[in-house]
Length: 186
Image (cartoon, rainbow, N blue to C red; front, side, top):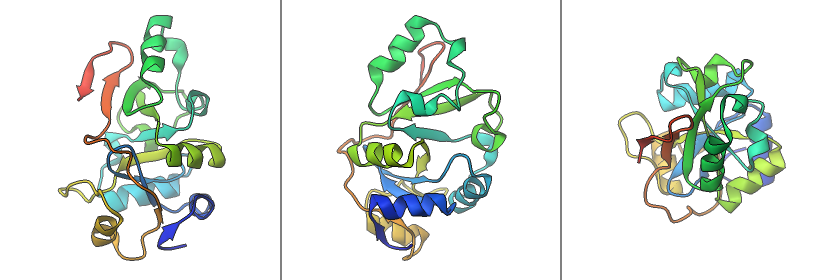
């Protein structure tokens, strides 16, 4: 599949271990199946990003994140703070599940996760049945893409894009530490 895709076509790409672009609340993201080392490796190569940095997972609802996180390490107050920000453009650094692979977490014993409020991405994750990897759609050193044309300019005219509009936000998602509540990126 190439070009502008429907949700169904995008799911086919994800099942085929391809990297896709998709609109988020404020910028386009690059994504893939988080359980496919082949797809994640391809994403990192396209993005020119080190595996050591780790990646974000974006989901339709909290339960989709449970295979990747260990929320038993969080108390009720910490969970309340997380749930109060979701769905929305807040990414939380959470303790990782022991089975969560290195290619998602890099050098960390945690993983960055978010429950999105973007209706199209919520629908994609819901229909796919799990979260997808989420990193900004840009080559190293370039600004994140805000249009489909910018994606094709940076990644080539055949790059698969879930067709849709950005959510109207002006900044990338805020990143916070689930244990301390501290803002890592505002």
